Amino acid sequence: MTITENENPRLPYLRDKTSKLTTSPGCYIMKDNTGKIIYIGKAKNLRNRVSSYFRPWQDHLPKVWKMVSHVNDYDFIVTDSEFEALVLECSLIKQYTPKYNILLKDDRGYSYIRVTKEPYPRLQAVLQKEEDGAQYIGPYTSSYAVKQAVEEANRVFQLPTCQRRFPQDFRKARPCLNHHIKKCMGVCTGEFSEQEYNETVRQAVEYIKGGSQQSVERLTEQMEQAAENLEFELAARLRDRIAAIKKAADDQKIIDDSMKDSDIIAISQNSEKACASVIMYRGGRLFDKADFFLGEKEDQSQMRESFLTGYYSVREFVPKEILLDEEIENAPLLEKWLREKSGHAVHISTPQRGHLLRLTTLAKSNASEYLSIKVGRTGHEIVALEELTKALGLPKPPRFIECYDISNLASSDMVAGMVVYENGRPCKKFYKRFSIKTVADQNDYACMAEVLERRFKNYFDKTDEGFSTLPDLIFLDGGQGHVNVITPLVRAMGIKVPIYGLVKDSKHRTRAVATGGGEISLTKCRAAFNLVTQIQDEVHRYAITYQAKKHKKSSFQSELTKVKGIGEKKAVRLMTEFKTRDKLREASPAQLAAAAGVSLETANELYALLHEE
Image (tube, rainbow, N blue to C red):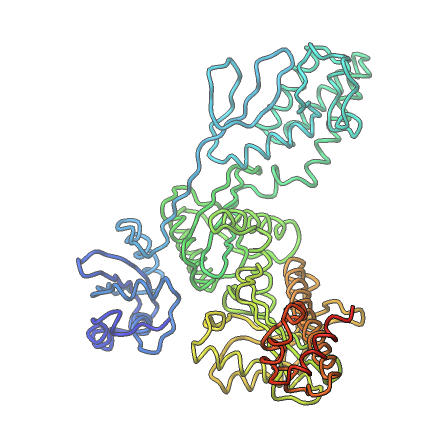
């Protein structure tokens, strides 16, 4: 969006002031007409950075456009280096909390682990501490970490999670499926004493508090002691429990000795909004998780840098390792700032493989789910658009996607269909059908060119609401040839929307996305692949349904010409007037005669033809 003097009459003054600004590094402080600070930023070159806000041709993101429209004046502070500018920026943002900077507020409450007070206690994740005599462990600020820890402990120690009460329900029914698949010890069989069961619960609590390594060491001592006392059944159970803990440590994400003090940060965004998720490991175990709604999205790298500076500005503890889902430009600069802030080395990295990549993927999934709640979309839809954005190299996730397909029978009844997806969902009110008008013989390239030219002519004419929105991405059902033909045509009309083809295999299934010079495989991006396949199937269904309907109509028109005195033009006139075969049958001979412009005698013959059945 371009800012104009209509939105902000102060632009001439601001441009003149900025033209005299220093090229040194520093911070700039934007203010509204009341003198209130609304945005604070840093720059390596103050003049270049600040002038980018006020250029007449500059295309801004919505959030930046809104901020610039309210800028009445600005101050600046020159520093000796970009690093000093970063430190100053963080300090000023913390002091003034400007409206258009990312303000990190989450909506978390507290969670507890409850050990119920009963002969055979249960481990539960709860949100409130009650006066019920139970043992409560906590509070924790992350319900996510609590739920994960309780589920892990119940699974490893095979504690019951059913609704049965013990000892009241001993032997009243067969053990459930969890017992048979080794997820429950089978307390309902009555084979475990109260003392033995409570010892298992105590071990599970120690496991939650201390982690797998301490639990294994302690259980190993107990197993060896049981073996010395010739308690071989107990020793065997402890051996199995140790094996379960070791196995759980291989594939769970709660305890990871390699992640001593680490934060895993990911940001998810749709076409307009963004959310961040931070998963925290402390002492080798999952300690906490926090989600933040960032509001309107920005440039991806800049948004991550802004989040990091805002997030760690207000935190006393900074971990030694920070993992990000995407690379950022100024990672060394931020590492230096965090090192001076914390007093120890801090490493920022973006994993590309292995279990660290799985952790950033987990953080990304959490951010997507949090965003889906905020914007009313599913996490799957958000992930699909993000994967598609990354695969195609788009600057942002597309809000509106248009897809076109041509359908015909040889050279007859040539039509096209246009389907529209908004934020990953079909938007059927904007679907459009086209009858090909300028192409006489079968030529998919020429037909597609006619359709796209008509579509964007309607966009400029503003004659139809369905054409009034410019798409963020265009798909053509076809390969490189379609892209090479259509792209120059669309560019000549002043439309800069990215255009790709959708390629099918020999079995008419989606195979890849075509560019003007090759293909992009989506096989590694499952969510994006499924979305593209859905779009291609939908546009094919829509186009072929229209083609079949039109062919049926034209066949009926040809049937009308069997009546002497009715040619093609009069048949078209009849179909235009009555629309359907049923409406024609309901018409009287006099009405037919008037519509077609024929005699009553000819109309009677037509009436008889329509009612032959």
